[in-house]
Length: 247
Image (tube, rainbow, N blue to C red; front, side, top):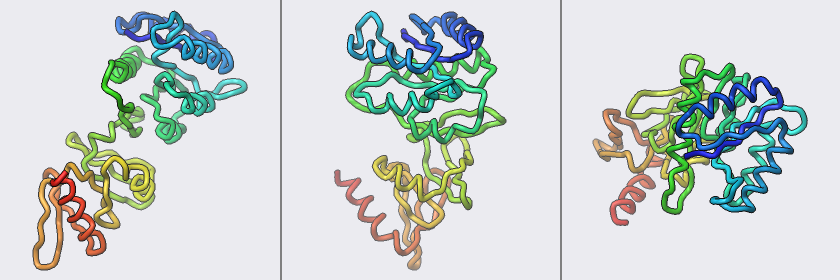
């Protein structure tokens, strides 16, 4: 069960958030802090005490706009800790999803907070907080769906298609448009096995089902999609696939 710290400098909003969190059976305890300094003090004390200490914290639900340090500032500071708690942003502002993505937030919940939406966020945190072998929290990317920001695990993405300054993420369940250039995702996800095969496409190497050579043209099949491979990327792609098979 989760041990939660909620941070908001507006006490009515904090009390409402704590009420909803405490009514969720997956939450063992939920405490509040009304400013970033108090929150950082509690988190630091919890980390010193260890994961089984009395003040241990699994996840921090952070408001973004607060007097003094913002929620984004707090998340940046937490990123420097050896074993920081997970972070969920709770905010009335939609325009910080990209920063949340950069800071590895688990979710991004908009105010006014709905019980059902908060339950989704608690579920995500609960899944990630389960004990697991050494590794890192699965990276996620925020997408907008009908005015709601949701986070798509990068491991669910089969390939990405450039659309100007935007990128369309293709998963087994559909596609999502995000305002991030393909070149940025190429650099960020290289270590996760994504490779550039064309100026328009970035593909997860492990999701390639077939490589085909036909009259000098190279294509790959990723699920039901057939994607062209440019000449400048074809040789490197073949070498990567052969290395992947042999490893």
